[in-house]
Length: 255
Length: 208
Image (cartoon, rainbow over all chains, first blue to last red):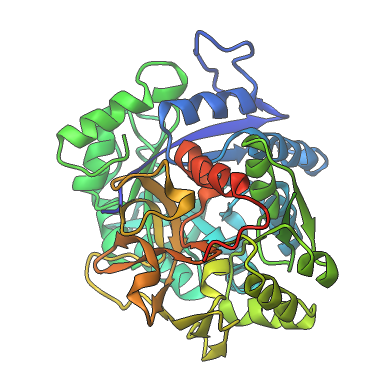
C-alpha cells in the first residue's frame, strides 16, 4: 500500500538554512546538505528546498546546494521559490532535483505550467497554492495569494487546483496562509476540499505544530503527504517519532 | 564500468551518483558505439513514452540498445527505461517501444481514492529471486512516480509486484534484463542495495 509521506521543508537563503536548526550532532547546523543528510537518516520520505533568496543574481547558489545535496542524499528532492522560466526548470532538474515547484509564475501565466509539464513531464511539475480566507460580498472564500500571502490573485483555491491539474501539474502543495506559522495544525477544511476536487496528489502544508497534526492532515484533510518545517528543525520532534504517531493513528507510513 | 544512456529524458546525475556511492563507476553517454560496446547498461528516464522513443530514434540509440540487450550483458531499466522495453505504449496516442519484452504500457484507470501519478513510497512483493534482489524482501518500500505501468504478456517476467488499487508489475527480470518501475536511485538504502547488486554482477554475464 502507498505510504503517506512526511516531507521536511528547508528555507534556504544565500546557501544556508534559515529559521535555525537545533540538531546537536551537526558540524554546521545551517548547511542544507548536512540537514538533508540528517533528515534522510531520520526517515524523511522527500525533501523540499524553498529558495527564499531575494535577488536573481544569487540563484546560482540554490543550484549549487541542489547539486551538492543530490550527490549525498538518495531521495526525491523538490525545489521551489522563484521558478519562473523553462530555463529555471531545466537548470534545477539537471542539477539533480526531481521536482520543481511553481507558485507566483503559475498565477501570472498559467500556460507556463502546461509548457513545463509538456517539456519535462507532469511528474516533476508541482504547483504551490497559497489560499487565504477572505470575505467577499459578505461570504468567506478561499482566495489564492502570492508574495507570501500579501497579494490576492482573484483565483479561488478549489477552482485553481482543478485548473492546474488540467494544465498538467503532477502534484499540488497547498499552504494555508491562515494556518502557516501558527503551529495550531493544518487548515483541514481547505485541504480536504482541494484534495477531493483533484485526482493528483496533494501535500498539506502550513501550521504543523506536533505529529498529530500531520496525522490529521492525512486522515481528515485527505492529503497524500504532509510537509512541515519548524517542528523538525528545532529538534522538537524527529521524523521517526512523527511517523510512529501517524502509524498509531492507523496511517500507512514507511518506518 | 556502467554506461548510462543519455537521451535528454531526465535526471541522469542521480543515477550516476548512486552508482558511485555503491562503489561503482558510471559514465553518461549518448554515443551509439559506446552504448553498443558497454559492459553494463542503464536506461533511466522520466517523461512521456512517445517523446522518449522519438529521442532514442533521433539519436540512433534504439538499435544499439536492442543489440546490447540481445548480447546477454547486464541491462537495467529504470522507470521510463522499463516501459520503453515493451512493444507498445499508450501515453498520448499509441507508440511503438523497443519491443524487447512482450506487452503493453497502460495508464492507471481513474478510480475513486486513487491519485495519479502514483507518487511516493510503496511496498513490493517478491515473486522471483532475481540476482539483483538478493538483499530485498517482500515488504520493502521503494519510491515510485508514474502514471503508466507495464503489462507483460508473460507474467513469469514479473520479479516484484506492487499494489495501487490493483496489482501491477514493479520490476521485470528476464535473463540479463532487470528493469524497475520505481527509482532505486531515489529509494535511499534499499534502492542502493539493488544498484549495488547490479554493479556487482559479472560484466559478461549470460544470465540465461
